[in-house]
Image 1 (cartoon, rainbow, N blue to C red):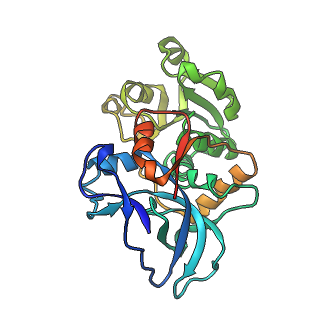
Image 2 (image 1 turned 180 degrees about the horizontal axis):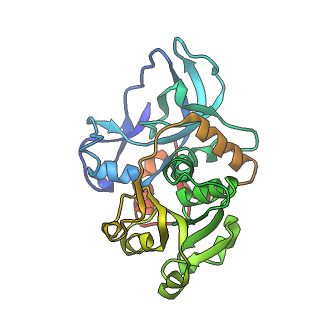
Image 3 (image 1 turned 120 degrees about the horizontal axis):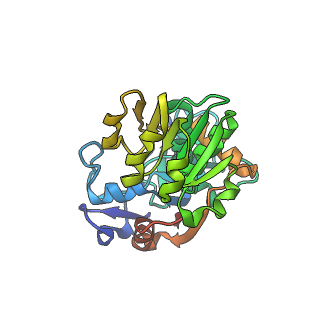
Length: 302
């Protein structure tokens, strides 16, 4: 099969496109013909070696954490999936024509959702959902500020919080404020507007997806006894707010959440924008695009 892999850590130039051994499947696994793989920031961190202490790459290694595609082979002990099923998953080694996936991690692509575009959903929407439901434990009637609400994780967090009956403030950049009206939040605040952020009253929780200066300022917006939940780690400033519960959260694979979020997208209740679709062979270009920031997902098509 064709795949994108690395032989060493480094910049986009270490990404190679070429022949790679077809994956073998074992008990409980299925072989998926990949329709698309999404590029996530974690892919860039993995490629550059930033994750090597807890998730080292076995060289040569195929990158990628998201996929959508079609089941082409079913391993022993697999129930509920058959050849021809359209599926999506937060998996691993997805920058390839074929990928072996644990069947327990698979979800079927719901009606109304494009197979290729489904690849944009698993990691980002699962992370946004769990940030609200598990890390922040948002309940009906609470007010939550979602930082980075215009990104994929943030959009999923806004949707999940609203779905749980919370009042949601979408924290975005000033340049995104007008477009952010479509997110379905109750209020929009420009996080790069010091006056606007200062004027914001304390909230029950912050669901944080950003880093840097903004992340440092956000614990101060949480009421005493409230929660600062973050998927980007805890900023140093949290030590100044001992009355705030800090949850530094790492999301985990969950097929039920993937399915629920995919159903929301398929039902037009949630939108995860797709910025570009590139051939798998153009993975370097895709990594450069994601590394420079953007409002939408970048997909690689084998």
